[in-house]
Image (cartoon, rainbow over all chains, first blue to last red; front, top):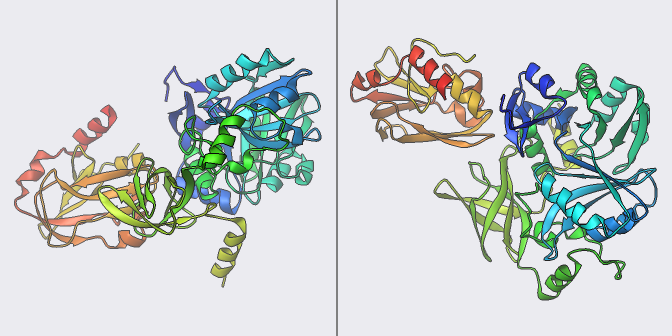
Length: 371
Length: 129
């Protein structure tokens, strides 16, 4: 993994020293797994794991017109962010209502911070820049930072142990805290992409190897992008570029709930298209499929339903459940039993509503196992 | 570094084949292959008494990463399959040359083994991949 065309995160050397299996992802050299991907997955579900997500795109937006700018670009309403430290999930839409990216917007003491995907970096930055002039805003793309996600039922406690920052325990879900740490400021958010409790920390690049080491010392297990994918899919969370893209709208992507139509006079990009689609009806939906036979569903496999054909967008073997699960785009009326074409053979599956794994049901499963 | 025992012969498709004391050819996938695939989650095996042909598909292995076909390294009749892989496919990762074996063939002839790579050739082949 010495490909010079790939960008490196501040933790690149740390990953190599840990024996990570590295691969190119969205133009970055990223750890896919360190040892067993399934062990890393279970570590996050049962205790605590950490992910290097420094490849994510972070843009700080400031200036008098920032809120107007965000209310125009994000389909969820940044006006809901009533105080510094609150955060909001939403999507950026094009005029046709297609999804350009999914983002988290944080309101800070001064200005806003928007975190989006790595794969869409150039598209999203261009999208902002092409519209920022009409508002009084200043955009700063942060390239001097690292981002580490610490996830799992023990994540917050272990993080507090490792750093002494016990105030994170009080942090509410989807809220963020700016804390001074060693002459720098860390932003710590109670967010994640695993379906577990946890935090995501944005800190200066130079501090990342130190934090990674301290967390490892506190028993937090390094986990790669492989486990990140199986965890997010069990939690029913979309992956941009796979489960949604510029050709699919939020209602077609199980994200209708992220669009704020109220107040009616908020003019956000894509609104007209979504309202038209709402009147005419939405043809497809993104839903979950659980495989009831052996095999593993993968991206692009054909799905046969009672209401017509569809396609698997994301498919994995679920380490928690012990069978294959996936997200598929199928006709809206599809329900019940479906067939999935896996390597030339039709296998039986069932349409289910994501998430596939919930914290509560896991608790029950766990207590069943105990003698 | 991955393990490549001298007792086995190797195919370019990363199966190993080893002649046992009964004259059967035992087949599995190499340590290099399991390392590349990552955690194995399902193994599809041929049926006992099934005829398999050298270089033809005889099963499949699904890992967290991808599905891969398994090719028979020699022609013959399948005489045994490792049914413990049904419930514990992780044996392929833990012990690829031992408990993680896939199936055994009664070979039409042992000549086809000579067409496979020895351990040294296979190690070089993996490095060049």
